[in-house]
Length: 252
Ligand code: NAI
Image (cartoon, rainbow, N blue to C red; front, side, top):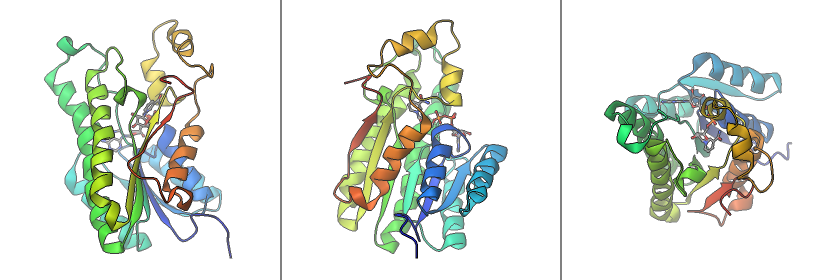
């Protein structure tokens, strides 16, 4: 017998080849879940699976572009084929998109960012919910961002997509509460990941960022994963439609 809270459960994490998604996949595995690692990055996804297996856990990698409906549908199908069920999902894959102000943004960059970050989150919700309805319940967390709640400069499509993820989370939570599916979001603040490294290339960027964070430091992916795992756990059984900010006080 095991007393791990996610023993016997199956967790699906998108964007799990890197950063916050990898930390979440590892955290679910540590708590006893079988984990489906989904990402466009094959080598990174396989590395996450190796890390889980090396720690005594169980995981598979499914190469998936979340912006493509057929691939997301196949991801959920493969999850069920491999593990027989889907209990929790962390829809986390995203790109930062181009760095440019609104009037300079290209249509191509706009479409790509919205497609991955907003449409991709909706597609994941859609196919996960279709399965959870048959199964009789589940818990889902979407990764939004503090910039889905407040503005920032130079990331208009990213901000719009993340604001969309916040509202999509609330709408879906209302729709599926009676079906026993809880749907919440996390809004990370600045978190040490490859994405943040790509965004903080200008000299002094980190110092400027730190000045906006009351706790005085950038967060770690594990600190975001802890919130995701809690929201998916039975300890959060009365929590749905909640937007949990994990940002060191940045937008308090
Ligand atoms: P990351 O770049 O380290 O990881 C993102 C992962 O998503 C990568 O493995 C990438 O290959 C994958 N991905 C990208 N496009 C994909 C697609 N079309 N289909 C499947 N997978 C795809 O970034 P990080 O920081 O770990 O980001 C995770 C989530 O956290 C994202 O939703 C991001 O917007 C959000 N976030 C991150 C913050 C930060 O400071 N790092 C702050 C606020 C939100």
